[in-house]
Image 1: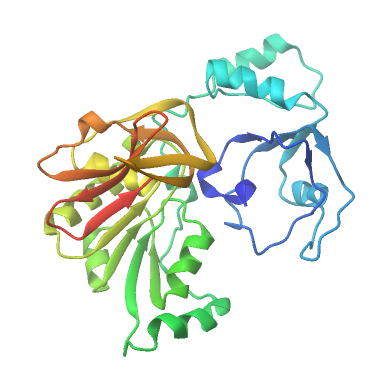
Image 2: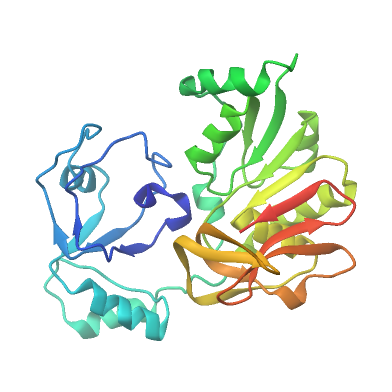
Length: 308
């Protein structure tokens, strides 16, 4: 799942679980077909694959997708370095070159700040999401409805599981590129609009921010954003984002307001600053309880909300 999550596009993943590869690869858990990581680092690599869903070994998957891997190092020691110094650029190489040459490469490698990676992972053309596995749940959620609800999804690096979930609830899902125009969105006469997850610096996704601002100004169509989409909503309201030192990774991020806490799954390197959200326009519905970054928004008097 994480190796194919477009939100990790262009990055190197370090797994701290001691052994990776023993369950192999299945294709049901893949979040995209092409927007994948640059490299993985593991402690123990297993090519002894055994799982009823397995279709491919991890080694074969890495070779097929041209993803470099490194194993046999102390991954927890590496993670301690990252925890102290923050996420940083890195190189994995099989070439016999000096560390000085590697450092010169790194010095000329751009930081994640300012990178519009959403434009690199977004679809180039409009399409309708058809998922043949959704038939059973569609009936449950749509049997009292004469027509399917039509959702326009703006693709900044959308995950298949999100598209599947919208289909499961009986929606007709039309996916549009990240640089789509408001005229194109409205031409579909949607019942709702979804702003997806994605990689990179949200403040550089200028076309997405403008689209969100214009749609929020109209304010009549229900809108929902996740991850990068959530940050784009905040920026469209005049909020500020910044690069986190470590990012939020994993499925145990505590979020809430007051005495209620939800444990959430997150993957992002940038965040919305709570103090930057205009209180007269929007309400912060969730804070990340570790660092008080904005984990949820609701726009007042409009059917528009988002979560990190």
